[in-house]
View 1 (tube, rainbow, N blue to C red):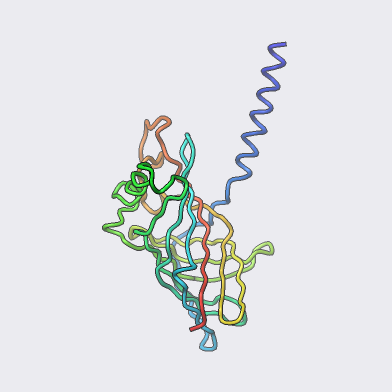
View 2: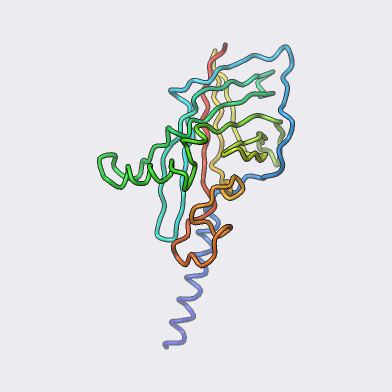
Length: 218
């Protein structure tokens, strides 16, 4: 009976582990930086609304996760016949907000301080990050936006699935939730890619992100 119970437990554990893996957001295809895209003269420019644009983030460790937002401080995209042709936007790294811990709790300020310190994003030295469009394509029925993401003076090209809509003078671009490997941007703290013997004190390299860009016709 004990042996049968252990076998059943092992199967359940395997199924649970597999399902957890299936629920993880897919990592964005990451490669070397590419030339920025150039829009046609006929393209229409939309300027980012900083009040309505943001990036949602989620980080993971063995004991749980944390999540929050980062503001997009400026940017614009050029659109032709409903398709994004070029553009870029700036991410204000000093605007990192933690949303899973109540703002009045000490842990909120402690985590935010850690994320903005030189342990993680070193906001004092690198106050902004940038995304610059390099192309757009259709892959398996999904619109894939490619662009150079620069953080901490390290640039990689990523491709992410997005949807875009235009209503009147307003354009909205929303990405699916995706992950990036922070080690590729030299964010080292608690990373197994840089340090050995971390035990269960490591922090996952994968960071989940979701981009929402709302822009108005210039």
